[in-house]
Length: 362
Image (cartoon, rainbow, N blue to C red; front, top):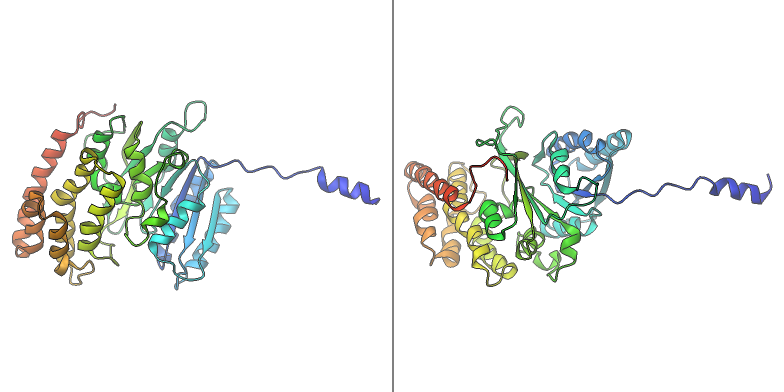
């Protein structure tokens, strides 16, 4: 064959460019092979049905069989026509740096990070995509989507709970209202979808500058809250969160000094946006976590020392003394009863603060 004909044959069938994904689902992982496998198994058929979604897994030098799980998943994704990219760090760079790496490596217009021990339940990807694109297929002008969640211990299917008010979607333009609805759940890495392209247009600190805070995820959600246009709440509980799986950090340090400092750093002079996050943490989240882990034999969150750091951060806030301190310091049986009563009161206050809380859609 003449060389010029051989060259022509090689160039007549150019590879088709892969379109940019609308959404990146990023999964930072370390030594949770079994749980990662479950997440990828539930994601694979969802992503296969939606080529505009990519999954990116960043293995933080796991020492278990995570590489084998990722390799097997990559084969299944490829056979199904689903988009999966993976990376393995040569050494463990720490969870914060791995989170920031995931954000930097994402290619989608929107970014959704999911913990390797959480699950994005069947049909959840389709529900999210319906919010992220316009009827013409273009990216929607949404800054944030709050993907609500439910807790499970063993079987996410059997333990799934629906929204008690039958809500599906709320569209919210007022940032204060959105902060009230999401509150401390801004810190839940699997619960927030962000408009990555919009974020890149804003003056902001890069996620890498928050390494060491255990709250890197706030670096891509709170700037969008500060410059808020419109966001959505998906009430259908698309995320199943494993209960009692937290460890590896000090509750008092991360959700005391660090949370207060990072929120002020990202939402400077905006108490209308910062107060809902911190106050709900004190009223509901910190007391419930304290009771949960006080009931376990092993103190994995440093509860014995939590009071000192939480008092340093919130000692001037009466909510700390009324809600959190009793959950930490009362005898456990009394703390359970007290916290159950204050949680009910806090829920009623929350309902009163959020306009339209009871409506199915808005």
